[in-house]
Image 1: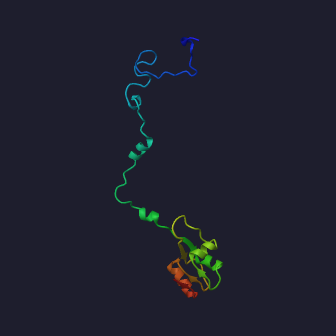
Image 2 (image 1 turned 120 degrees about the vertical axis):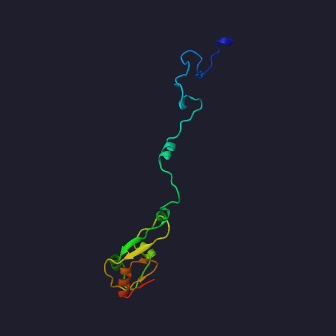
Image 3 (image 1 turned 120 degrees about the horizontal axis):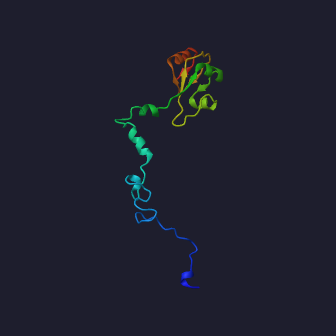
Amino acid sequence: MQFHQIKSQSRFKKSKRVARGGKRGGYSGRGIKGQKSRAGAKIRPAARDLFTKFPKARGRAKHSFKSRMIKPAILNLSVIEKNFKNGEIVNPDILFGKGLVGRPKKGHLKVKILGDGEISKKLSFQKVLLSNSARAKIEKAGGSAK
C-alpha cells in the first residue's frame, strides 16, 4: 500500500470560507450589512423588545399591600346554625375540620361571620372576625364573641 492510496474513514467537511471565489464569494449568503451578517452575532432576545414597550414602574408599588393581604373566608350565621350544637366553640380550626372553610394557600386561616340568617344556639366564637349584625345576633342568643 502506498501513501497516496490511504483514505480516511471519515470525510472532513471543509468550513465555509468567505470571499475566496468559487460558489461562496463576497458575502457568502449573509447579505451585506446588519446584525446577521457579522461574525459571532447573537440575535437580540424578543423579551427585551417586550420590556421596552411596557411602561416603567415608577415609585413604590401601589397595590403591593393589597395583593399580600389574605382575604378571610366568609360564612353566614345560617351555616353556623345548621352545623353546630348548643354550647360548642366556633374557631377557624373547627370550621376547617367540619369542611366549612378551606385551608388558604399561604398564611393563617381567617374566617369572617356575616349576619345573614338567624341563630338560636348559645355558641362561643373565638379567633373569628364578626360583622356588627352577626355580633348583635350572637349576643342576643346568649353566645359570646372574643
